[in-house]
Image (cartoon, rainbow, N blue to C red; front, side):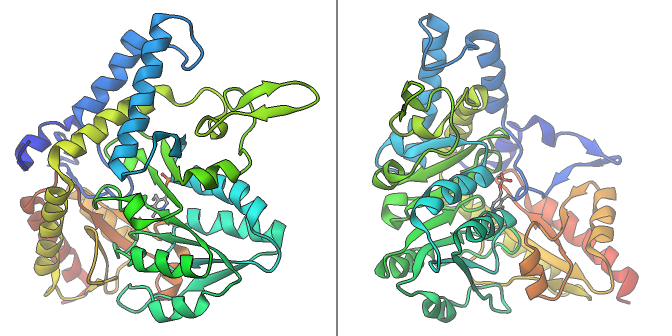
Length: 407
Ligand code: PMP
């Protein structure tokens, strides 16, 4: 499909509604994206025609559901260019994927005095699991600082890397600022001291082409719901040899080879990490989301979203009292800002009254907000179905709101 924004909008039923009497403008895509018809239809079709438990059934429906489920695993493999589909593990989301790595890889391979590096711009889900791990192991958390423009301080990062570093866990693209981090360079530098690297791809996977082999990251985590797919589903990619060396996370059905009261042996990857009945319907529907993205081409998506972001920057630049937060050179389409003299929540409410949905607050990045000396921001984040006309309406709204306190 050619990149035709009107045609794309036609695939998203939720966009065609009014909010407070105004046409909905949905700019909260970094929180979660809307779902195209294909995804909604895949969900219904699964429950109408194929619903059954997978991997162990001896009947046609179970075979079909298993086939569809495993098809998605292969699509995810292709989507991020992993070597084999066994390296793709389904979880509940980015948060669970990171916790899985912390509780398995972390507990086995990171000990007292070892160091884990994260950055000031991490989402809480890439901070708290490591703090929990450090508490039980005596490992130490080191933090890469962030420059005023929202870029990582690369020189400081290099200084933090030592032979004690066991893991670098860093966000690929920031949800609060949009900054795209120089992850390839960081991965190579971390590997040079023998550390493993986890990339939080929650925000990058919907905007950038991902090649885990080219990047050479050891883990990559992301959530389907930020990729036009269903909620409650995430991915953990890990290199085979590392996943095999890790102990299981949850114990139960599916993740075993044989259970006796004396000893249980574990299944091969990926099943070793997928205990219990998985989120079958959402995994199957996620395939439709990946197909949707593939049909558009990631380069075209990025170009469209870059254009929206630069248009938003251009239209807001001269608004009195408008304060952009995070002006890195390389960004995904996130516009984070404050208006002088106003609380972000109030700005969000006033935009909502105009039908414009944005996020306000700390965006689960409290340490980053502290770094900038603010409580939170207003965040407008763009996706494939947003238009320049919507950006114009937002900019007009911001200008009017800013005038209240900035005459
Ligand atoms: N990391 C980043 C960068 C995110 O944007 C998010 C979601 N806001 C997460 C992690 C957590 O994702 P989830 O809530 O889907 O587990």
